[in-house]
Each structure stands twice: as C-alpha cells, then as structure tokens.
Image 1 (cartoon, rainbow, N blue to C red):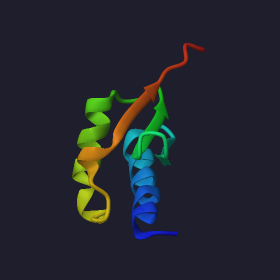
Image 2 (tube, one colour; image 1 turned 120 degrees about the horizontal axis):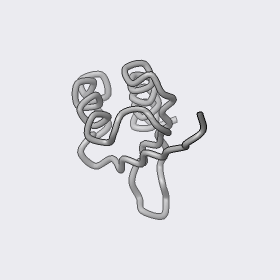
Image 3 (cartoon, one colour; image 1 turned 60 degrees about the vertical axis):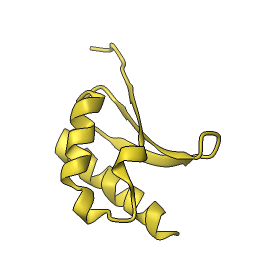
Length: 76
C-alpha cells in the first residue's frame, strides 16, 4: 500500500471520529482523484474543515484536491 493510500485511510478514520459518521476515502480511477464519501452527518464544508485540521497527520495527501461526496438517506 502506498503512503498516499495509507494517508487516505488514516484521514478517513480521523474524519469518522470527528464527524460521528462513517467516512470512506478511495481513489476514483475515472477522475484520477481521491473521493471522500459519507452519508448524512456534516456538510462538505464542515468535513473539509475537519480534514484541514487533520492535514498534519496525513502529509502525503493533498486535502485541497479531494472530491467531497456527501450522500443522504431519509430513513427515520
């Protein structure tokens, strides 16, 4: 596993902890960018803010190039 992929996993874990919702980060080969995916929880701006606060822990990953993809479900 590359250092960047390891950093993506680390960031996903940090964002999951800070947001209270499960976050997954994966490399989207079609667009050649890492995609951050979660359902409900904070909006993309807040998730980006959380990621910027954690950027020192994932130096191999450029937070500004990530694609933020929040899904929603209306169950409940």
